[in-house]
Length: 150
Image (cartoon, rainbow, N blue to C red; front, side):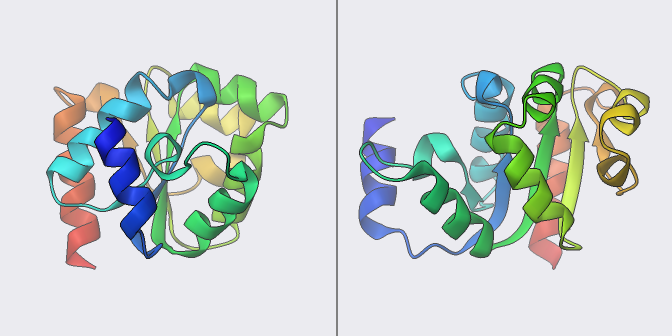
């Protein structure tokens, strides 16, 4: 992982296919898994765990990541609901993404009904529910097929 972070920090031009919005608590679990699956499918993803080198401004890097990404995916989990309710960084990312027409919710470990109670605007967007697929890999393939066709 260290080599990947160093490589991104040294060669990054900022442009990505997707910005991955997620709860901090999901960064080593579902968000990391989704990032790895998407990058394995040749989708370039802005992911804080890989794109924010130590000693740099997290907020500024996020701002640049949002500006340089063609679209955003929001990994909607119970942890994300907590982050949004606490007005965490994910809430700021979500606000920026909702201001565009480039956001796809990915509901994981919860439902669109629950999302609708927390963020009606995000729930109104066309997205994917991981419960409807056999694996997160299948969801990543669906996202990659959509993003790479654009």
